[in-house]
Picture (cartoon, helix red, strand yellow):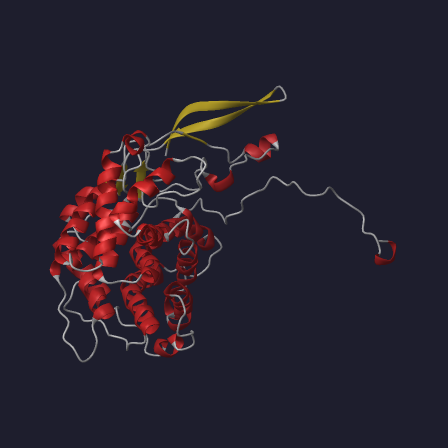
Length: 431
């Protein structure tokens, strides 16, 4: 972030305070308020931190007005079309696209760490049979520091690196194990000759008595889901990872905190909520009824999977995801037909209806990813775990950046206190 000697002047009761104005490489200028409390004895009040930059980062940039998402400067659409998830992982972690030797080395390191410690199998048995997969992977991720304590020293760059590789490599195995445990099937070990997405699909859907062949178009669609969800600037879960990391917590604990935050329905559960809505609608002939409800300001019902809090025009990830959805639905057109018919008709109406166009309520990435995962055969309980798997590399990249930042301090938000003023204690006999 560059300084240019510009200042913003804040006037409080006739006294003026000058605050530096700085310009990032892209995006709106920022006002540096780090010395505001020291100089003026006031805090800023910003619930949700929607107008506050908590850190400097050169990993991901979002322009919500123009519908742009950049990973290290590269438009996510270009990466989704021309790249693959492991290459995007390298880009997010190290800042540049790899050459062939670098990519081959990184791919091999990830592949060689996909197995989990055998004693972790017993850890899964401690969960109830009907435990939600997100509860399982949150617990297992936190427990990794007990199994891999040789990579928890955050002051050691080599340990930070091996912890990063381990988490990226092992999350597909852990998520597939959580799925298998939830449906009462035996765990399937990873296979080193498969790519990242194909390996994950095989671990989820293969059963020992039968041969399982991964459909390339399905694997490609899942790989795109991973890429398009890999990072998304300082969202709630990423900020949680950074806040946990600011205390010096080990990387496994920090990522477990991010997974726990992602579990919230307002964050990682959007694609699950979208699919539940499609099932609630039930059939295409009921869509007008729900469209009418969505347009009624007095009705609390809202269409899930349309519009985005950050993107005010369109979600750049949705265009690519729609292409993948069309490819997947052509392969599995005979399954889940009512839901898919509802989704296609709802998409058509939303893209043509002036009400949605005027409000920029276009189908977003959650609309299409939920349809894809449902068509592939994943239950809705697995949608958020797959999101967590995808986002792990983004969390790790943000965590590594934070740990290496010499200006980083432990997170300590302030508050606007609205409770009682100081009071004297009254003995129980006098109350």
